[in-house]
Image (cartoon, rainbow, N blue to C red):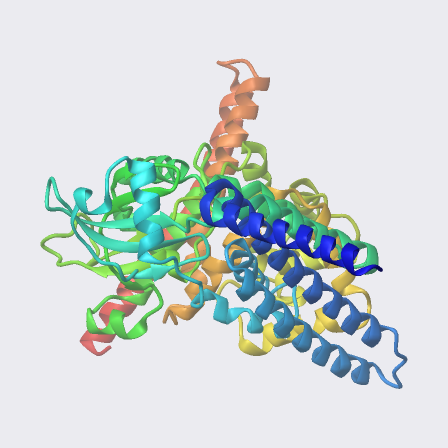
Length: 540
């Protein structure tokens, strides 16, 4: 190349470089576009590299031949751990909905190996926070007023940071009321479409490389829920509706929903209601709160949501979204000396009435050890066919190993050994894990959310170390199931028989007696416990 030509290229390059620099320095649109492209490339790179590394690990491990099944399990365990650590770093690097995905993985103890679920635990408390400057800019943009004109005091340090938002404490300038201010991470809206696309792409690739382990349903569920959760006006509406509904059930739930002050899609201002973790046993002991009462209230709250017609289900009841708050008996609106505070009403689902009915039948058949009826309603609820898938479904729903699930004893709590045994069965021979993954990929999404809610509330209940064991919790659930089934029977009977026919009257009476028999179990259990406690106090 001639020197003159080289110099010409140099001049063109210099001109482009100088022009680009000037545009970046003076043009906001160009600067924002450049920044967006750079960050997008980084996020894509993080996902692509982590995915390739994990695929390579699994292909190498699964492609080997092993002398024993135990040797294969050990190799898989090491691979699970390595891949989980690679994924953890990628999720932390990208933040946002990736953190939420990791938190969801943590809850899938019935599905994923412990190496994966345990590795993701730090994501519960390691969410990246937005700066106060970012919050100030977003607040003024969304509210049309500066942060410090709206609040007389605003703590720049968040009291809680989650994957989608963080919470600050402030004082309203107009009223002097202390409030909790939930603000969405400002950067989320910019990259959510890209992150959803990347997540679904990765799960799609996984299905092609490992067709026996379909996880595309996870990506689908994330896409279906994330946009709802990112609009805080939905959360405000859900909170108001839940608070209004449960006013009639205060004496069995002790539920407190913080009142909404103001809501925009990215900013939610609500009543400040502090509390301790629901499973903080020291707090319960220090405030003379009975863990059995807390367990009963928790059972009433979520069984009411799951089984009662036209009531929405809070789909994210993890430890961070529930709190216990001691109250003086003289100030309590209920018979209890505590309130259960329910936060984060962003994700609710309405379970179809027929599914509530079929699910009620399924649980009553579980409690009655009626396996033929269990099979019938497992198919109706989730389309379950085949012996192995039926056993897996029963195990996933009840949180027990298949033998205990099919021979249910409500007096017997789940042991640590049983949990380990369930996880070992998933990793063992016989295609159990493959069947579970296939079953979950075909299951209605609402059933997956019920499974998730079951798991989270079961875990909280177990952490309470309820001295009465799980029996009363199941009797409470049986009451809700029985009411749904009773109402269904009355509706069907009234529909198919004349209003004043003797057969209709006798059938309704039969259904009523069956319902009374079911709900009397809880009454007699409570009566027995009263006498038992009285006997203990007087020394008999």
